[in-house]
Amino acid sequence: MKETEIPPEHPRAESLRIREKLVEHYKAGIVAKAGLFAHGRGEAFDYLLGEKTTKNALKAIEAAAAALLTAKHPVISVNGNAAALAAKDIVKLAEVTRAKIEVNLFYRSAEREIAIKKLLEAAGAKQVLGVGKAASAKIFEIGSERRRVDPAGILVSEVVLVPLEDGDRTEALVKMGKKVVAIDLNPLSRTAQFATITIVDNIVRAMPALVETAEKLKQEDRRKLESILSDFSNKKNLGEAMNLISQRLSELADKGTFISIAQKGKE
Ligand code: PTJ
Image (cartoon, rainbow, N blue to C red; front, side, top):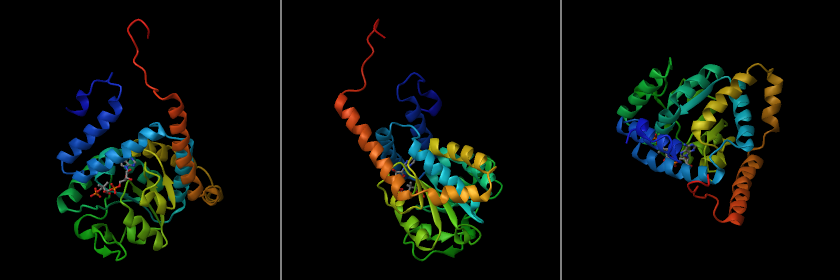
């Protein structure tokens, strides 16, 4: 079934459309096979969060926008899932925050790098770093293929946005003194735990909200942005995200069934 063939009245239509988008981008060589599993893990947490951007996520989004806007060399790191689900917003965010866009893959292959670069260019990106020989620098603290980075991008950046990610790199980047902004539906993941700012939200909702917030905060002076950053505690915010899940579950547990079948004539 194609994304466009999903019946709009299906109660899970939006979620099915996102899945189909990932499957199509998998077939096009953009998403890694493991990217499909990764999305399934994210979906499970999205269910627990109520599939909406919470106030808690908005707080992290504000801090993330402030971090990107105050950085000299902000970079948005792009993998297969992020490109498939948010290419246009990645380009918009790069424009608003003057960030560089760099392809950085766990399951690295020349074909996937090029396919992702083309997708980003079709979405309006003027420059895409980290592809082929351009990823000539190495971060030795990272064990995976993600260690290969662009000397004009992640290597010299002080703030890196890593939308949905596996954990080893975030830890290494933070150890190098960089600020890492993560978008991860799982507040327990290594990335979520190690990041400087963790947005516990679905990338499909978080990225447009981040673009909008960055556009607004861009009008503010630097002192205001710095105070947003110094007032933000990732530990506290992650704790709140976990509490939200726990509170929601206990409210639903009191009800037991919370979805009912609308019977004809009784809707
Ligand atoms: O494209 P590559 O080769 O770089 O590989 C990308 C994947 C995602 C396959 C790779 O980074 C990976 O294996 O990641 P993990 O370890 O599965 O972690 C992905 C994290 O993203 C998990 O914590 C998921 O809960 C989370 N996640 C999945 N889908 C979404 C998400 N978070 C936000 N929005 C989503 N749509």
